[in-house]
Length: 377
Image (tube, rainbow, N blue to C red; front, side, top):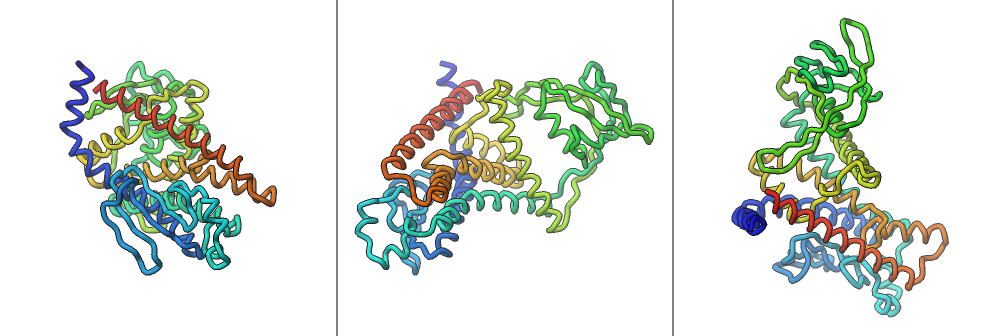
């Protein structure tokens, strides 16, 4: 009954989640597919369709090149269908390819040089990273970033900082050799390393000393009921107002922010493999919808920040070497470049079947995590 009650609560507020969810996902999917589309056009590939969503078409139109731009009924992704594709996953239609004349082969994706095909496929994830960098840069330019020095104002008793010997007035210069520019940088590093001993280079009374501290795991719920597991050092700092920056600095900071998400994603996956992290943080469409609605209730800036984070995640996920994903296609093209000829049709078909099974299992696992998460609210 508790599970049914939780789903009733979720269902009653779903409309508040649906609009932000569609907003975020549509932007991310559109730019991903636009990357494929733009490079394919530059390479002279004929494009049959550009679709946001799957399934029945809701509305669409043809451009002057004959491409059908369409919005489909199931808004959980999208695709670019090239001339000669057998499916939205860009698997080849061997029968159609065999019947092509010379003029048709000239504009077919599958008859393009392997370098061009790889560029077209890689352009999707790259577009996601570019989108994230631009969003982060815009936030830093117009809304600023917290730039307060990483100086200790208060040390809580019985905290990791107290045990390590931190004192009021200490200025943190680096953590594990990584330079710390502000208090927020220190917070982010500490928060993702609970239970791990970190080395702090600290300036105290004009001298540099090294302190070893192990952030303690703090597990609590935010105002939306989501369980957060983060590392706590047990100190506070004096927070200055956010500082805006110029375009070039903002772009540089956008790149750094994007790389931070990539780095933390790989660290999280590695933590799952070695058993240090819990896989229950992996979420699917239901979790994304819920978080989108929650973040939208905070501010539009927060929603755009989530869009950038999701863009990085989708770009990175698509680069995994799993057939059906962009990374799987790039893996096949790498083998083709090394061998001088593509894998056999049978080998590619087997790879796509394995990839489909992996993707389906991942979706089932993520959706199950979503269900358990919603039931716990």
